[in-house]
Amino acid sequence: AAVPLATVPDPGDRLLGGLLSPDFDDRSCLSRYRAARYRRASRHALSPHLVSALRRYESLHRLCAPGTPAYARALGRLRANASGDGADPSGTRCDYLVWTPNAGLGNRILSIAAGFLYALLTDRVLLLNGSRHEDLDDLFCEPFPGSTWILPPRDFPVRKKLTIDTAESLGSTLGRGEAPGGAPWLYLHLVHNYRTPDRLFFCDDVQTQLRRVPWLVFQADNYFVPGLFLIPRYERELSRMFPRRDAVFHHLGRYLFHPSNTVWGMVTRYHGSYFAKADERLGIQVRTFKWAPISTDDFYGQILKCTHRENILPAVVARAAANTSTGGADGQQAAKRKAVVVVSLHGEYSERLRDLYHEHGTAAGEAMSVFQPTHLGEQHIGDRQQNQKALAEMVLLSFSDVVVTTGVSTFGYVIQGLAGLRPWVLVRPDHGKAPDTPCRLAPTIEPCFHRPPNYDCRTKARGDTGRTVQHIRHCEDFPEGVQLL
Ligand code: GDP
Image (cartoon, rainbow, N blue to C red; front, top):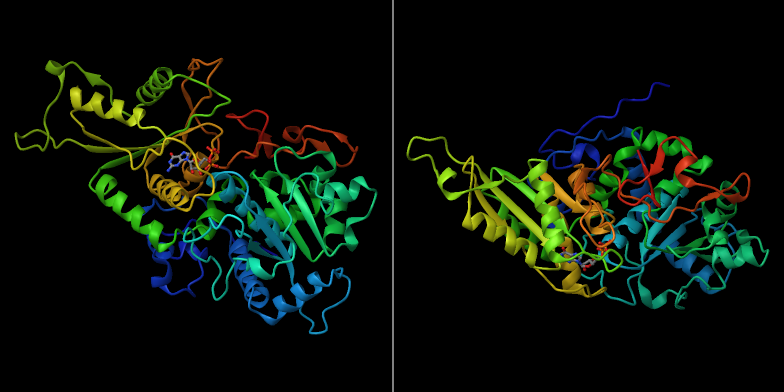
């Protein structure tokens, strides 16, 4: 049969070309239908097959979500430690994928999106277990109409801390030589430190066995979507959902992650103060990592070199040469207003940029303004207000016309994905110094999967995930990782 062509949604379409369901009350989640007014329209084609898969998923979620009779029955079987083989007498069978938080907000958003795609592919219902951290509170809206994706923690019997050594993990089960298929629940450890038996998750035969396990609980700090593209049984469905593979997170992210009204309030206030009056909006995300140290001076120098070289920010000129026109009242052309929003845990970068443009003019006389919403100093994982601010900043930066991000940062991946823009990526330091090439335009908007399995399921030996299939390559910002092209 002829496959209908994927289309790019109309700008200003609040349902994003059918990506979003119309079945929501606008007031319960102001951002859902309003973000489209602030963001550039997507330039990435959306396939009708993905749209119908989402509508189908929403019906399944409604049928199986917490609060439904089907959920109560499935939970009863889990409590009784029953395997998935007995058919439900009512005829509906609900299988679940339970997400468990791990690492910072960027990692969490990426692992939820990856889990959701796995749920779509395997007809499972995705539930978020935020119980131990309470940090999902007032962060996101519900993404699925008429139901919840939050797992009520009180009646969920799997309470133990899940680690690489958990006896019920896929890796431990396979390590004991047992077949995983008969278990009532299984833990998938998809965290960067995972070992070979856990990595077999990405093999077809293991996927066959997992189909029989009604509850899968997973933990990931990684965007493992490229790994799903390695599994032959999902190939056809993935190619229909994503005829172009380079915008998977972009679509799933715009579908799933709508900031709560509290967070949306911050976003619109930031937007009103910083971006609304500008002719051009530039977002710069500055992230420093302990494993890649660089001095503030060097990193600031790298940011300037990048933004000047790529004509992202205008160079400053000596006072006499500066064009000081501000509004065109003197008959000159009105100066362009450029707003720069810097997000970072540290305040120094935006302070220096602001001083630079306060003290000097530019050749074309642009009116430059530089802002930074917060500078929290250090990261506090699992703090509700920190998460809210971090999400507000990610969403605000996704409204930019041009983005500069720091390589390897999942915080930056979320910004570029939601924006649908290939970012200028600040290259990681070279032995503590700024690298010669300060930044590069990313080859894709897709996030990097930092810890691919590097296992060849056919030869049952180590393999290079970046060389297995044509459309998965090593990442430019983090060559150990892989990404979809
Ligand atoms: P990654 O470590 O860069 O991959 O990004 P994550 O989002 O996973 O973890 C970093 C955490 O530090 C975030 O979740 C925030 O809590 C905090 N953080 C890092 N950079 C920023 C920033 O620019 N703004 C804010 N508000 N928080 C940040």
